[in-house]
Image (cartoon, rainbow, N blue to C red; front, side):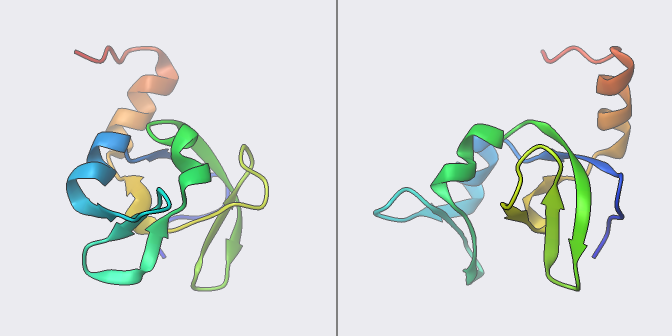
Length: 95
C-alpha cells in the first residue's frame, strides 16, 4: 500500500477508467488484468475528485473521509502528488 492515513489522493478520471478498464453490463469498470479489481458504478461520481484517506484496511485498501464505507485501492488513484498539492494551493488550472 502506497499511502497513509491523512493523505490526499486524486481518484482517476472516468476517462481513465474507460480507457484502462472493461465496462461490465451492470456499469462497473473492471481492471483489465484482474477481474477482482473494479470500480463499482456507485463510485463513478468520485472520479477525478480529491479524497482524504481516513482508514487503511490492512493490506487491502482504504476508506475515505468523503465516501464513508466505500473502499478504494491504490490502482484507482492518479498518483501525481505534485498535482494534488497544486490543486490544494489553488495553483492548478485544468487545460
